[in-house]
Image 1 (cartoon, rainbow over the protein chains, first blue to last red):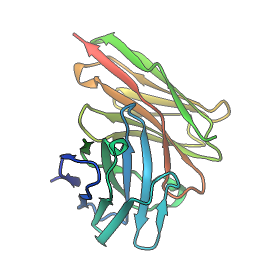
Image 2 (tube, each protein chain N blue to C red; image 1 turned 45 degrees about the vertical axis):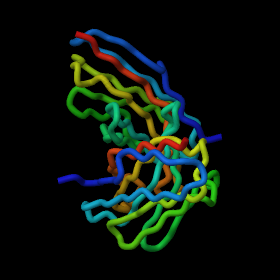
Image 3 (cartoon, one colour; image 1 turned 180 degrees about the vertical axis):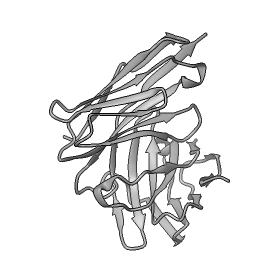
Amino acid sequence: DTAVSQTPKYLVTQMGNDKSIKCEQNLGHDTMYWYKQDSKKFLKIMFSYNNKELIINETVPNRFSPKSPDKAHLNLHINSLELGDSAVYFCASSQRMTGGIAEQYFGPGTRLTVT
Amino acid sequence: KNQVEQSPQSLIILEGKNCTLQCNYTVSPFSNLRWYKQDTGRGPVSLTIMTFSENTKSNGRYTATLDADTKQSSLHITASQLSDSASYICVVRRDNAGNMLTFGGGTRLMVKP
């Protein structure tokens, strides 16, 4: 059984379009995340979200918005796509623990290509 | 600035050999440090998590060390296998930063037969 799943795995779209990437976790975790991995392979946090708070990385454009219909899902919606949005996007989840040692489990990634 | 730097950027070794990957960080205040393995086309998978008080932690053939005073960590791989070919990413969590992590750029390891 897949712990963290994302759809689609590949997404090719044109500039200016609006698209969504879906993420689901079946681990019962209370916190989910979205990361962007650029061409240089650096992973950068975009959002951290649980049912109480949304933490947004200040460098993320407001064209990006997370939407969570329930605890097991955190979708990423992107408006007015730009060429620079091309990257691999990873969803992850964790269970909040004291001491900040919560293990994060990553999905397989969605490769977004904007043309 | 909170950063994580890794070296080398890439490494090629022969199957069966050992290797050590390095990680230096400036993230402060420090909470914990993680090593992840990322296979091509896959998401990262955790190998170890170390807190301030831990100097070394092993996971099979992987052994991570942490020197919180010098802000350095290493990942030692023993008796490498072809399946060890992947990117190894050092990740540091800043204290009081929720679950926000700072990632290094990774070391790309290739194990050849």
